[in-house]
Image 1 (cartoon, rainbow, N blue to C red):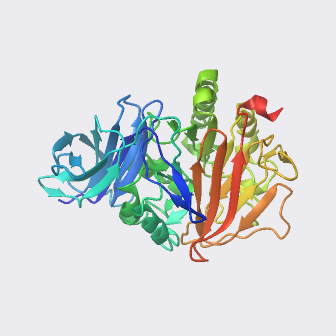
Image 2: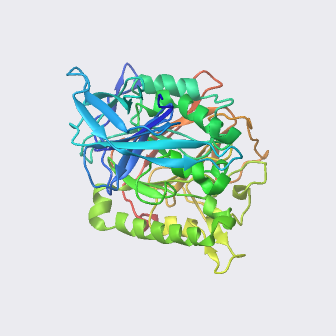
Image 3: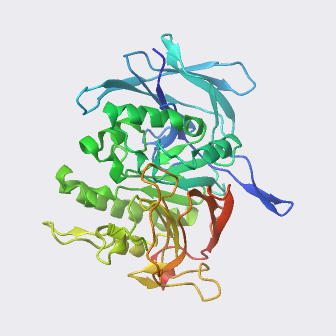
Length: 459
């Protein structure tokens, strides 16, 4: 039985860059990535992807994940590019996943860790067993430098129907433009449909991205079915929280992924909301220890449903009393929101999706704008910057905006597209929005400059 889904996970380290030539930004070659407590970065191959996982504490490692319909051995054969093909073999194990639909379809999810990888080296690999092997894929391992300058593609809300941005993302991934992919919730639309076959199809669609580049995720509302079981089982993120919340380090940044859905699906347990909040607080405290913030000055969060948006659909982010922003007062005990927590610990950039649009906000806290200055709003701002990038394309098409933007809304677009981000160094972060409707045109740009990081930077 050939594997019909594969995932690979990196333990990475760092060193990435792009350079300027002929007046154009050209993305350079990935070197490495490091993740503080054994986090996973994920790449996918027709349900195969690679992820970085820090939880095991093994450096220079990659986790490969894939699925099969029958129980088989879990094997990855790999070797250095240009060397002896498949000179190394790694074995792992498989867990059983039973879809909650009427057919109770069973699949086996395989996970294999590749260890002792040479930093900044290119590898080829395939996975499976003697019962059948995947195609051959490749990746570049990462290294440890905190001066490494990684390049990201950011998006959310991509389905297997109308995945408008997918072909451009596939092409750019194959060109080596990205070191990490951040998928900010909502996959396939929906993974559980047709007894999980829609999820299978989606994982195959993103294979040409996720089998080559770490593919990091967070859950969205479209993963709700059967207590998020497809999301929990198909992906392999860092830590031991079934992919719901985790953090990892790369270059000069500490990146935190979390679930906004704990504020909405209370039938799955209010305790998840409080467990996540306590974990977020502890993780932010650790990231703000002086020695840690000095090495990784940028703190970036990614969650599906935004705190703010100027859309016209009545979603949570359109209301002043946003659950994600301010919490819920209809629970016992009262559920705390996240805006004050993120502000207290000096989160620099907050990445969101859910709205099928792109929106860049001015630095904002408590519904008030805190620009660095009128001339340079993103130079030493006095509040976090929010980016909403949920326009990758799905069957629900576009969302709309209210006619008059809110005071904190700086730029917005209904074009299908995705976001590129580069962590240049500890003080400069560059971000741009790509319109797929306009054939890859860059329609928005931002350079965020922070000479001081942390909660004290707001004063």
